[in-house]
Length: 239
Image 1 (cartoon, rainbow, N blue to C red):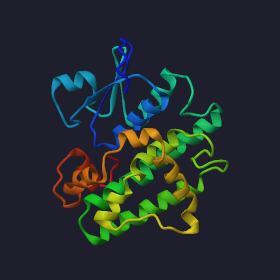
Image 2: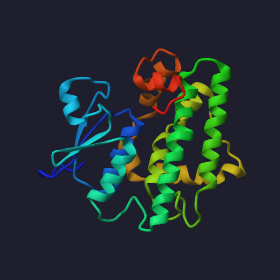
Image 3: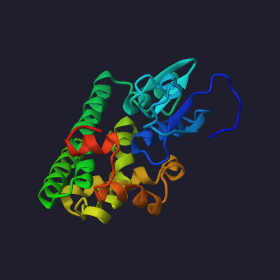
Image 4: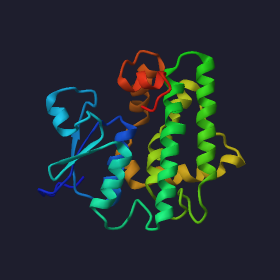
């Protein structure tokens, strides 16, 4: 992040380990926005935190005296508040709707099962979560367009960010639950996609080391995590 001082700089509040937070963080980097980073405990219930994020959600962006939260909303805000290239949303109305539809698919049909396979402790529940996650990933893969490695083809977009931040740490799900996206023809487009996403400079700057990720997820895998995220995942809800 730039050290250039400006009263108009957005302030990003998130946690280093949060894939949801990485969505906003990588978006700011992709746009080349000068911002201030605040390491935050998303489970902090203090009045000070609620002044920044009225619903207590992280990531949150505080900009010009106003708060924006929910990770997918943050991405769109960043793209619209700084409308220069590169754009994270396409210019065509249908294409924008297409991106939003598949971002919603990621948030409802993939992410809950990724968390579910980690936090649930019975083999039966874990296997079902793995199947459901893979079904969601296959549908997302089949919706990808030609013309380049990204979801829309040549254009890197919000659709890549919402899944890419989680798919980049699938090694964690493999380590704890044996989950892998198969190296088959059916998923060849997926592997082309994730390799392109992980090679982006913003990803290199934001994602923690493998060791840190594995250690952070260990309490979830061992059934010891009592965070709101863990509780939601155990109930099959979107965290």
